[in-house]
Length: 370
Image (tube, rainbow, N blue to C red; front, side, top):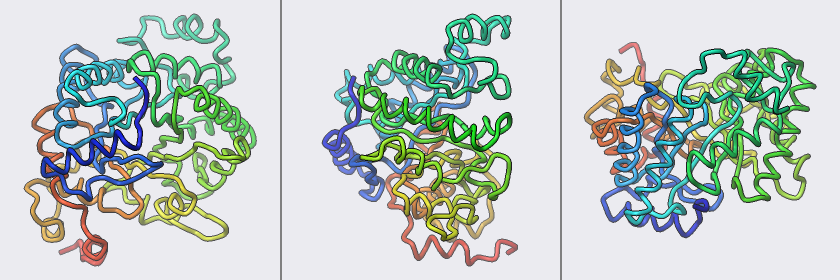
């Protein structure tokens, strides 16, 4: 299966709108139409029941207007990728072609095969070090590496798991972890080598675009040990591919409890201090928000005034999703969904356009102590 295309994602969006999905539910990025709500596959047990649940949830979500599917080789010991792959097969038989869907995965963490190994040290030695995919000096926190050989192995495994020939967005998974064991200059060298590999993967057609999926790096203040400058990182991509790089996406947590992507000015672009959302827009990188409902922690108990601003929604989870997808600069927000009920609750938001700017900004005028 090849990757997402302009015409394919336009067909998907047009079909979804005919099914009462709001036109504003889709945003354009890199010539593709992306749904403002994407399905994540991070959480869950490593068992067949959870595999089947994710596959069925994906089928339901796509039918309700979600065409962004996010996974990673390390999620649930590769089982999430394989569940996505089975869903893609079923969708193709149902008439939803691969080119209508935007598929994202990640590499950086060692991925167990179905379940953790009995002897982790021996497994690392046999699976990675003996094959020269990385050396002990390349490891951070015992489970993270971004050497080109390791990324090549991880990418090929992801393509096999997913049953596709192209992954639309391939993220370096939490590269800031490497800053725990090396200095900034060495880290920049690592990124340069990784980007060289990823640009080569684009040339081979294995990926269409790449970026970074982080947790802390873009939210913390400059000077923090695990801080990353988006301007600097994109600058490395430009050095690697001066005629046109493919670092076009970033993923970072953003929700009502973690608003730093919009509210904290952690980035600097051409001497101007900006929030991550602003910086990404300025540089030409598309922001994907992870943890829209904070892995379920924001699904209840939110203040009443939030319902006043985001009217027409029945649950706090829906209001959280509306907040994220209405944020200027956010292309897509991800929420983990592995039950049909949750899919139906969350994707019901797609029937409403994102909040207009004036309504969204009122959120920051409200006295939250009320």
